[in-house]
Image (tube, rainbow, N blue to C red; front, side):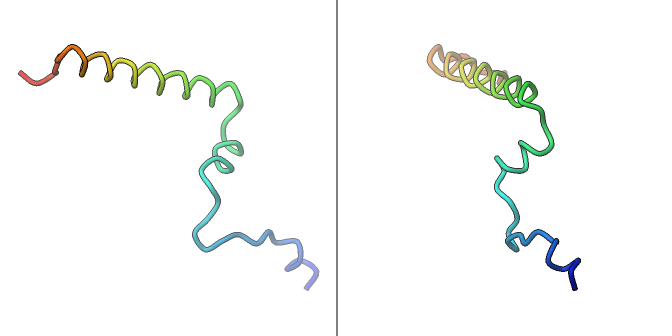
Length: 56
């Protein structure tokens, strides 16, 4: 029974992405990912503003 008390209770839905992300990635990896997202978002915004498309 003492083992059951040590089991962490989690929601049936699971943990939040932020909690999970912090457990599996380092702070540097999270920062690099955030930078990639920001750069890609800026590229998309600039392309939309200029009317540039990848479609032929």
